[in-house]
Image (cartoon, helix red, strand yellow):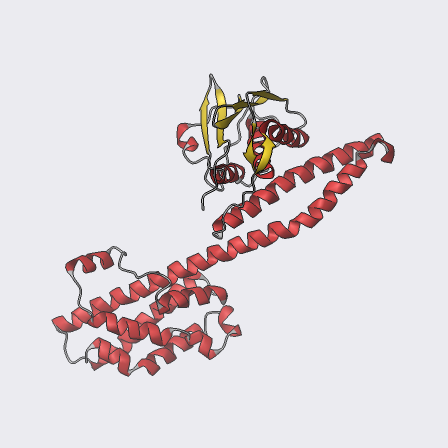
Length: 379
């Protein structure tokens, strides 16, 4: 009997074995119903049977052989199965085990019905294996996408929920640093609390922006008339509070008024200054140089720490990238999530600007941010 016909005629038997095997995949399988265990099994098997009988060009055969034959993950029962298995608490090895069991069940039930092996039966087995692999790929892609989305939603919720306790912590630091509120010891403790709150707030803000970008949300920009010197000065004060041991210098020249989102750009320059303070050498201050040109404002943030290798410069604005700690660093290890430069790039691009980095022993490490003075937002 042709394999595709055998699958359609014995769907209930094959699905029964699918359910029995899926029931062994603990602990996720113990908490869902038989219908949920079977979910898309019937539709997946029907699609496999159709695929076996579908004619293929040589190009299509080649694409399948190298894993490029899968349809879009949102279009198939296999992709829906993968996403639902992730939501039900199954693991990726358990998902792949289901397909391995399906393959074994179909062949074990079909082969005894063959009286002899022919070219047609060999071709059926080849096409069946290709179809199973394609369905597995679609399920795996959907499972992975759902995992990433769940992670990003969790990060967004975590960052949001941390804001309230951070605000309380920051207020406590302010109270403890008032001269009339306690002793010299409480002033020192208060200063540490304030620095920790500032550092954690920066990390939470970066985490929220990263989660927003990964979930497909656009970076919200609200432009108002602002002075870029004041924005940079506020960022310098933030960085100075987080790194009291680091000397900072601000230089400004030219016309610096323009339409900017002040909180967003303050976050950009705070991130750049914090990064520079973490990796600076001890002989030079961290400088932020603001220059107003005809149609844009250019900001350079410079430190004279160790030179950044050229390969790392190419990926430095990618998320979760952290510079390696230098042997010259005597301060605490960096406490960032590897998101500061990524967020700085996202905000700069949302303003219609550019950000770039260069590094050498002679000139130091320089981050250059160029922001159009009155750039219309993209629609």
